[in-house]
Amino acid sequence: MAIIGGGYVFANIEDSDEDATGWRINASYEFNPYRGKFSHGIAIGYIETTASESYDGIGDFDDIDFTMTSIPVYYAPKYNFGSGALKGFLKGALGWHFSDYEKRGGVADVSVSDSGFYGGLALGAMFNVSSTVFLNAEYEWAYLSNYYYKDGNINSIMGGIGFRF
Image 1 (cartoon, rainbow, N blue to C red):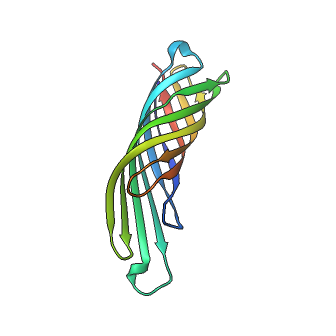
Image 2 (tube, rainbow, N blue to C red; image 1 turned 60 degrees about the vertical axis):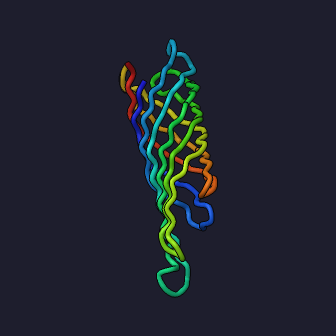
Image 3 (tube, rainbow, N blue to C red; image 1 turned 45 degrees about the vertical axis):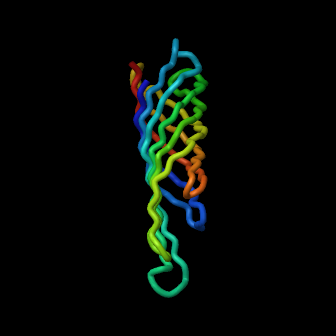
């Protein structure tokens, strides 16, 4: 199976009172031996989030803009449940991410590239349109570890289309 999707993302930013929001695109390939309940997949994505923070003060040093982009690459084991046209699934994520972090404003501008562990869980559903095409919807929570800008959580709500071959 191959799945292409995208959706809305919200995340926390360390050392900030604001939450970042943005978008995500994802592509995955899954192998489901004998069309059983368990499948194995690999996935790659692109995540972009932004946030702005303003303080009551004097001058332009009080406005801070954050931009974070990340490319997660991970193994995605999946457990499928249900029968018929609508099936549910529980999916894991275990891999690595490559991220860029920019902070503009305040006393200084900061731009850093980093990488680290990417792990998470997803809950979703697939609706079979035909024997080879299905619609996919999922919620994913993931944990990203980083050296510079500390660890964080990211939440994704995604929809997509999948193909069986």
